[in-house]
Image (cartoon, rainbow, N blue to C red):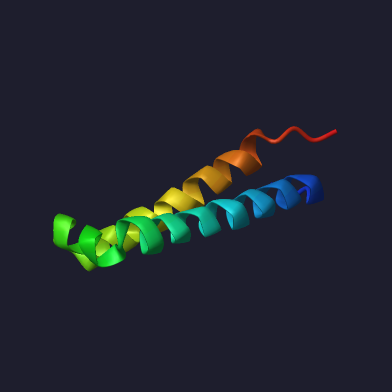
Length: 67
């Protein structure tokens, strides 16, 4: 698989914006400890949050059209 600069650029921009939004949402609005108490597992919450950033970023990379 050959990496394309344009696709990486769009994926990186999406990753940064989505990561900042999730950090604001989880740490500011929902409170991380509340989520841990609700789900009962720190590891589960961390894995879900990481996947919610990584999977959409991979999708943006995959579906970005190259000229």
